[in-house]
Each structure stands twice: as C-alpha cells, then as structure tokens.
Amino acid sequence: MSSGNVGDGERSSARAYGCAKCWPESADSAWEARSYLDQQRELIDGSHFHFLVLSCPECGQAFLSVFMESIDWDDGDDPQFWSVVPIDGAERDGLYRATISERDLQGVARGRRSLFRAAPKGEPHSNGWATGIVLVPHD
Ligand SMILES: [Zn+2]
Image (cartoon, rainbow, N blue to C red; front, side, top):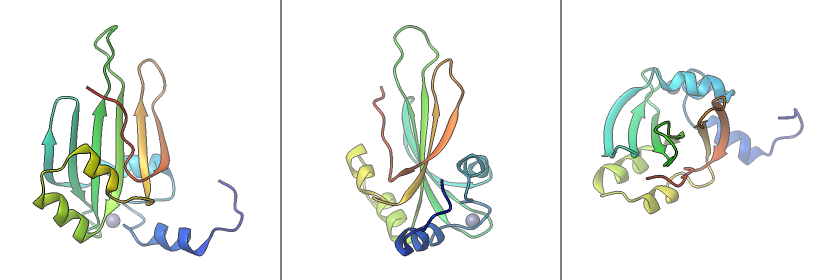
C-alpha cells in the first residue's frame, strides 16, 4: 500500500479495533497473532465450515474467525481459507444469541477490515486484507 493520503474514516476504523499485538498493520503478522488469541466459543462445528469467537489476551478485543474448506474432488488435499474480523461486544452477543447462518455472517462487520488467509492446494499460502467476512464456496 502507498503512503498516500488515507481517509479519516479508514484511519479511525483501522484504529478502533484491537491493539498492536492482535491486529497489526501487516496481514502476515495478524495471521501469526491469531494463534495467540484465546478461544471464547465455537459456534458451528462442521468438518468443512466452522467459526470461532476469539479474544485478545492483551486488550480483550473479540474476533470472529471463519474457517472454510472447499471441495477438491481430485484428491483429499482440500484448499482451506480463513476470514478473521474484529467484532464489538454487541456483535459478539448477537452471535452468541442466535443460530447463525452463513448469510448472517455476511452481515457482520460489513465494510470493516478483515484478514483473509488462503491455503490453496499446491500453492504458497497467502495472507491479505479484505473487507468484512469473506465466504468461499465450500462443502
Ligand atoms: Zn489486542
């Protein structure tokens, strides 16, 4: 990303969530940081799709982490994807209260910066910034 002007909205939303430890500027660092987060709750546990609420042990920021595995009919090495986004207390409570569908997930953290990790078959894994929860076709 260039060092050009960043809109105030973008800047404030980037700062509104997490701390330098759990939500750093680099997507690779953010993925690394995810492994240090505490698991609060597992919301759906499917073999190919599940999501977790995590929280930062440093600052208490909650995160929604969605895991997806897409079907690969050729062999068993299925491509895997993660979408991670910080959520506020009200959003977390909403996730706890309701039975959440994938469609509901798309309404969470709309427009907010999120972390997307792709681990496609036979290719290097990549971490990047996205917006909102990114859902990929999966089993
Ligand atoms: Zn934090």
